[in-house]
Image 1 (tube, one colour):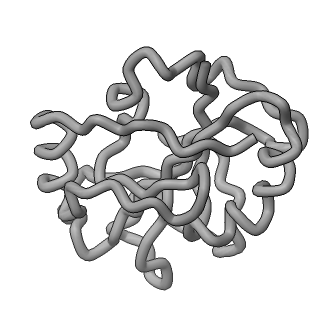
Image 2: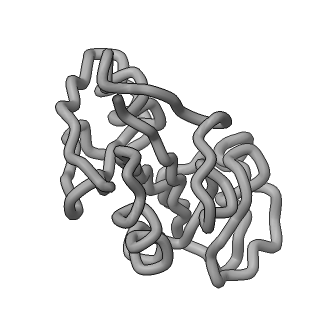
Amino acid sequence: MLVNPVIVSDQITSMIASINGNSTDTVLLERGFCQIGHFSLDHCLGSQLKDCWPNVDVEGIPNCYGVCDNPKQFIRKFKKILEKSSRKFVVSFTVIKKENQEPTGGWRWHKWGPYIGTKKPQCEYLYDEPEIKSACCYHVFELN
């Protein structure tokens, strides 16, 4: 089942979001799905967190963390699987925008799990992609 946890952000996660050019706010997209500006929802869940990557295994979802094109794509594909479970889940999404990337270094595709989107990444770094303007990291967390 999908649940809305209590999310307590701190100065560090807010600072990371700001550095990445993202909002420091947590946005509830729909029940059990939230968009954050940093990559560490597990640090904001406290005692509610039962388990997180790489240990969360959900049949029908290829990996408990990875990259999609946008949150709607993941939600359309996997919402029913998560809703049917008797276990409690929340999924976080962090959007990475090409425009916020530095010309050297930066966000790389292979560091964030399998890509389940429909685009065709051609480069190691998002900054170097000729056609792709953004990517979205997802993480599935299991709650107590």
